[in-house]
Amino acid sequence: MRIFDLHADLAEAIRPAYKNGKRSVLRNDWHSRFAKGEIAWTSAASFFAGSESWEDMKKCVRMVKEDILSSGYSLILSKEDLTEDPKETMFLMTVEGMCGIHDNVKEKIQWLYDQGNRIGSLEWNDQNDLATGNSGDPARGLTEMGREAVRVMNDLHMIVDVSHANEKAFWDILDTSSLPIIATHSNAKSLCTVERNLTNQQMRALAGKGGLIGLNACNMFIDDDPAKQDARHLAKHARYIADLVGVEHVACGFDFGAYYAEKTEYDILAPEQAQNFIRGLREKNFSEEEIQAIAYGNVMRFLKEYM
Ligand SMILES: [Zn+2]
Image 1 (spheres, helix red, strand yellow):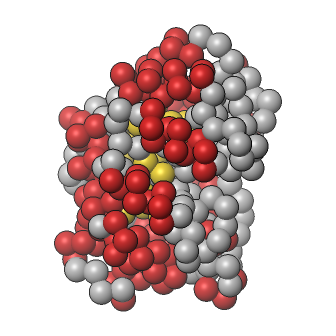
Image 2 (image 1 turned 90 degrees about the horizontal axis):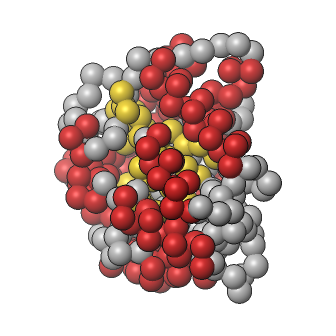
């Protein structure tokens, strides 16, 4: 089953190889792994946190774009690029955290968009000039500058991602955004209590506005019990969220650890293992039509409407 992965830290996969003078890293190091997992479309996130500057952001975004293009892959820049059955993996550039933006919000977000980024989160776990992440001050949500950022993104049809927002920022963004929003890589807090997962109330509101929830395969986000941190238990989140808000709001945003760390002990941490999740969905009695919707159909529908 083809898959659209809404969150992949590919900048972290490219950067170490770049430092060693390698190029076309996605093609040389990851192509066969994408193919094995049937990752037909993937996000390619540029990730920023802490004191990283606007210059750092520009440098990273340029690196990600250069590697996608020098690898001979195609970018998804508009709805017309959303081919139903691509011959090889297609890439959707995204931004995770905009801590380098302190002024000229409109111009800087326009630059990110012009480079090809089509989904962006204002914050990572920490707080910055735009918004507050889940480990920031619980009483602080979106700032005035952050509200402007959401409006600029809405005007550009660059989708706002709330996966790292704290609760206040989540509700502020939902209130401010004129377009539906996505939590690209978060699960259900009722099944796993990690801070970044979403409450039932959050998921109902996000879905009520037409948004998507991308399921996160990071082991700690699947279950509080380490023995249950596997693909089958990730499928349990799909079942739970589909029953709560409707299967049309469920997607994949695996955040595979293989892109940023070497781990070996889980069955759903790398792109080549993505089909284990599809098998988990079959065990949870989803129909083939529903599995297709979760695997890629819902994301395609959403992007065709809002991108
Ligand atoms: Zn993240």
